[in-house]
Image (tube, rainbow, N blue to C red; front, top):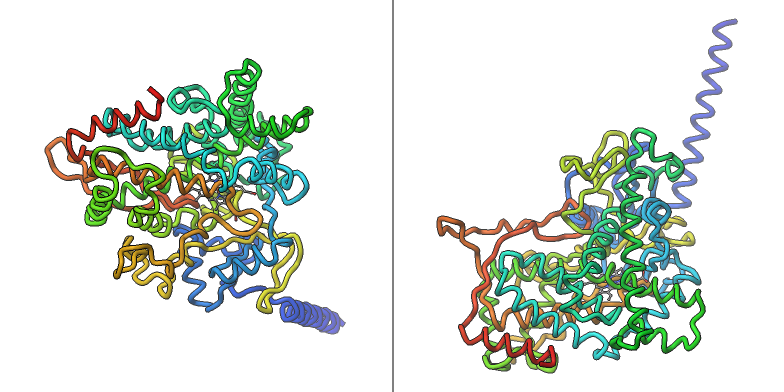
Length: 557
Ligand code: HEM
């Protein structure tokens, strides 16, 4: 009797197991996900993503599975990686109706309150309205809306560099930040760079970036945690969110309130905010809120991205002095030594453009079309900013990993099929720009910094056959709308610095050369060189006078 029961139960168990396997098989053949590594229950592929830059792992998987689209499972969240320009263009551009949203970020949007920033908004009417306002009032057809501020900021940067060369990294952030605050709110670049607005904006951007990587906070995976009160042990993320919220509000309201009072008093320089008010002749409170929010995004999205590119530029100049010399020869030939470069010189300076292109390609900062910032610790449940050794990125199941999801990733809003593979609804979809920029067929010897690859050997002009690194600014409806400003800021800074300074290795107290490791901080999703020292030497004593005169000129003195 007992043995009959055992037999019956075993039979049932086997039948159920077969049924389950059959269903799984049918499901999988009908709905094949793109190839990718096999994953463990619950944790998915987290173990494969430990301690390596994710874009490098993804690039290896791209080669291993020989597929321009791959699939990774991070703790049950499907992530789709697009490894070629063709795949990214097909999905993000041709099928943009499905791929223009953003993944939800509980810490960033719900707890800190960045919901108003259209950079991370889901696709919908609110995002459309903000994006439209931004691109109508600030677009590539109106260079006069940002180039004068960039020129002024770059020239002041040169003088500041002369006074405090050891602070070059800080000065770069101030320079890019002040020109953006000036473009957005009409502040004078010199005045604003040491103002409370810049200080507040830097703090707010640090918080935004730290919180924008889901997985930095367990609450992004378990959204119900947001209801846990801050006094509960382990809920330090709530207290951190409150601190960042205060910084965020200062960025949003402070400069806008100052700009509005100047507007009322009649002493305001033309800028993004004035143009918006002129356009909306009778702005109601909703419209005013939208102007405030859209202007607030500018600093956030534009400053640190440009800083990373310029830091890579300084590192490359230290490491490859030969290219620096070539650029300086071009500057001396075209601009001479009695004045500084201007935007009108651009078409005559192809080598400066080649250096800019190579900077954007070489260590493609938006390696996964996403942004973050080094120096900002990431904390999970229980982490604390005052404990620097807490560098835990995702504390699920005792694994620590940087998960490559950011505010800049796209989200699929419908299920879709690409090359016969199923892309689930609500999957995070990212372009692996690193793989695109290190494709040997397009960029021979891709791991070497070499601006010459953009130059035609025959005539020294730009080689239009080489792919420009524009993919670093994203794709489709969400592509970076500030790209024209980013490119001109970086261009004028590179040209101005090389016209005046020789950049080289710094010396230590014994006069020994300090060689930067050239390593990049890959613990964030953005690729940025580790801090390094370098030296800025005037190319000739006369250049100091040229610099001073040029600053006076842009100051209108
Ligand atoms: C080197 C500098 C920069 C880089 C590498 C960069 C890169 C990017 C990338 C990769 C995206 C996401 C694109 C996507 O989702 O497909 C983006 C979005 C954005 N960028 Fe930039 N950016 C830079 C500078 C700027 C500047 C200077 C501004 C503003 C003045 C700006 C404003 C924005 C905004 C508002 C978005 C959000 C667009 C949306 O979600 O609709 N960026 N940027």
